Length: 294
Image (cartoon, rainbow, N blue to C red; front, side, top):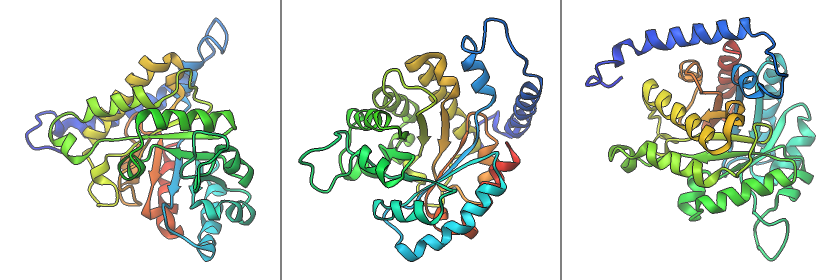
């Protein structure tokens, strides 16, 4: 924790209390008058399943798919947690064939269904290959391919049109965090990237502090709590009560050593895992950490 922050020493106690209250609320949940539709936001807020999703980025070949057998086994052993792997597009169909019991996703899609877009893949193509999820707006694409919030929103809408769950990524750079604008940057990305009318059935948000991706650096738990709380609030502002059911993943150097404490933070509903997802031995402990909190 930050030494200059006077409340940091008690954060662990506060977190423990929040976790205890959350477990208690789930145990005591009872039907409310007015019907399930009226209170669907409240129900979902108490029952968001953890999702541990792996992003292989531009890594892996056919022989890499052997790692998926152990991941599939762990997923089946912990059915209370959702597990997905997003390999390079060239491996999606092969992965689906090899481990039919494991959800497979893609790392990007074009906003158009078809057309003169050399080198791009559309959402219906990915769905036909067997993908269930698609990551859109990852920081590396925002930076390297110049993708805007408008681009990301259009891709998420395309994913929805074709039955894919969109994992919309948001996050700040180190310069933006140091300047004290991290929360403003991220909430602006939410406002611009999340489609109007999005629902928890097909939208997931992943918060990735850009400066922590692949660096081994991880924000303090109170930083993660503050940002995920701000994201939840912005989602409520953008899409209303439906936001209570939207899962918010943490995506910055999550590994087997820190997964349990990160996944225990309120409003952290899972992880978008990079390098650790390439290895069964490194990814399975994250799944297990999520299972202990389910």
